Length: 88
Image 1 (cartoon, rainbow, N blue to C red):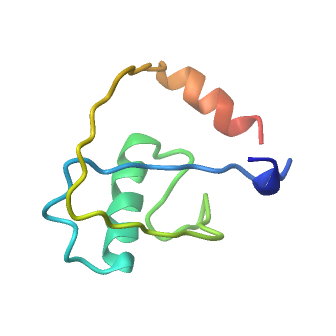
Image 2 (image 1 turned 30 degrees about the vertical axis):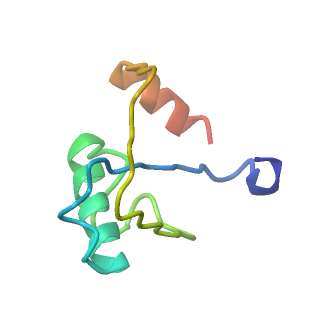
């Protein structure tokens, strides 16, 4: 992902699965809901009005039927996530 590298910014990719209830919604509704959830998880770093972290670019991909299986899940403690976010 070298083409996305920017030492002053971070990149975040998210996957909603299963997402039946979201497939018919607009991209802006999905982004608004995502920011709302992220603001709940990281209130010091993210706000729904983007006065803290800002979305520079986004692309929503909708796949009507996706067989998604998590093969490996790594859960990081909140302080490790904050440390990653602050390192930008």
